[in-house]
Image 1 (cartoon, rainbow, N blue to C red):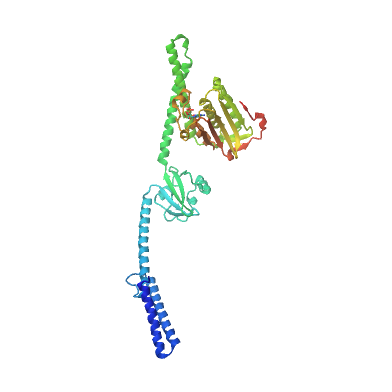
Image 2: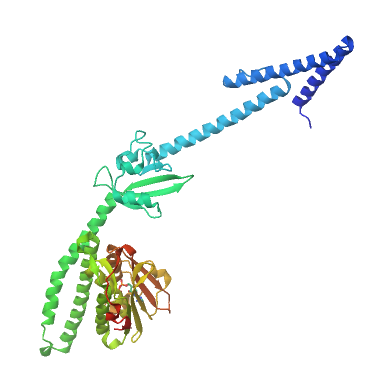
Length: 445
Ligand code: ADP
């Protein structure tokens, strides 16, 4: 269906051609008459075009719209409608942007938009107080020129933003920041920084409290156990003897909890000391621990098989590694039925050093695995207590392994035994240059 505007345009063309025809009939100048008509027609259109162009240049307001007819009137109308539509959209977007800016300005967390080269494109008000990034003076600068913490530099270079990072604020060492970077759009990043100082202080208070309480309890408990040890059960009744035996068991239990809590506090509070790290001949250490564990298991008849690479060393703190490995071997004894087999491995796996303890015990349901290394988390509390467990062993293992650059990994399923692995990255691994046969390779300890 032809629109009114096009119909007018067709009539205009037909009128022009009709006038040219009449002129040609009257004068006999056919070419001249049609050429003249065509020139007039084109000139009229050019003028309309000129008027529309001027109108657009001067702002395209309705008041100054050119007084056109036919198709040009329609074109002006369409342009004006599109313009109005765009204006409304722009207003909506500006409002939205203003609202977004106002809300990010009100946020207590710092927000910084980074470009492809990690340059600052935009930042909110909290970025001034937490990161020292001024809006807009620092825009265009690379973020690592302003946040010069080496850990942050490595984090940015590595580009793996899955986990957040904790660094001190460049404004003050007393402000602890938790920084998270999220990639979005085309090569853009949003950096969010949260002040975690109060949380850290609270954690420090909690750690101090636990450490102090444990410390205060240790002395009286040691005194009590000392008296109980020297107690002569010969001259007293069975009732008193049984009572003293119960007191002995319970105080020993309390002492081991206090001892584990103190170990945990030390692992948590003291920063890792690089000077204390040395190249540890782990196979010798593990062989000794396995023998000790078998001795402690005694009549329970566990068999501990070892498969140890005697030439594989790891750089770490010997005491901390021994504590982690011993806890895992003892757990395998404590939480499995008598007479079952336990395999202890120390070997190189894809460049990393791996310590693994595998047992044939009841296994652990997957819903417990993620929480197993939490303090006092036990699958079966009464059974763990009955076996002298404190519920702190795996927390100690996790911290001790992490302090030495490694990770604890637990694999287990009900009825299929459990495998606890400590994996140390390649940069911690060193060859000792020893003859591995000296240790006998694999065997029963
Ligand atoms: P606990 O002193 O109770 O051994 P841990 O922190 O060492 O405390 O271990 C936490 C819990 O994990 C244990 O109570 C037990 O339920 C479970 N667990 C640890 N090791 C094993 C294992 N080898 N097999 C089965 N369960 C285990």
